[in-house]
Image (cartoon, rainbow, N blue to C red; front, side, top):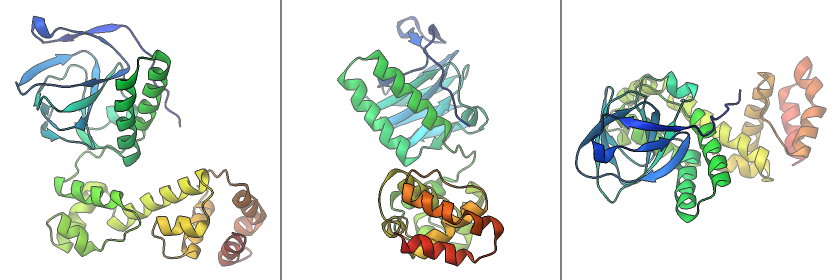
Length: 293
């Protein structure tokens, strides 16, 4: 289901601020801001997302009180008073919104970790907004930002020790870390780590890594001309056969990735009757895909 981003709307005034702090804000736009070390406190009638670009911000909003760093997003809902301060050299991408995407509206957490693609995109936004004023480009930039925010997983209760592990896993999917290695990053015993990870992420580490790898594999198959064997290497699947097996398994479950590569689509079409009728082994279908690569 696609998410439609709201267009620019009228000016709104921040509330609960001193006269010298009073500003008029255009909603549904992005801006680069800095703050001071002096603690400030206010609220406003619009929603706001704050994503650090350089440095960090200390903020208290709702039930959350702590530091927000690069790779995080803090949610300030309309009417929420928030106290904050930051080093003056720090920079932040701020989104002033009339409405929030459903995933953020429904979450009970005030801070979550953003995905690597969104992190890369906000760094592009930083450079773009500093380089020129172009309302057309800014509107398109905001629309894509809103779409990416709407895809984020806003876990309500991620243990801080698991945050570090997620960062390690996402940094290099081609590396297979053992439970012992991941547990060390979390400063937990292997048994404790497995329990805490599942409580935070609602899945095991293996399920989480597999999901990330399959998403990357589907993206590489759809948007590049890399051979299946190279894709397998990049997502740390042990062999091309295993990748194809997982790939065809998603087809059997009626969750096929969208592929633009005509050759793979042709192969899948050839094997449609095999998969639907289940009258031949899946291994035979897999090997036909591998052999045509």
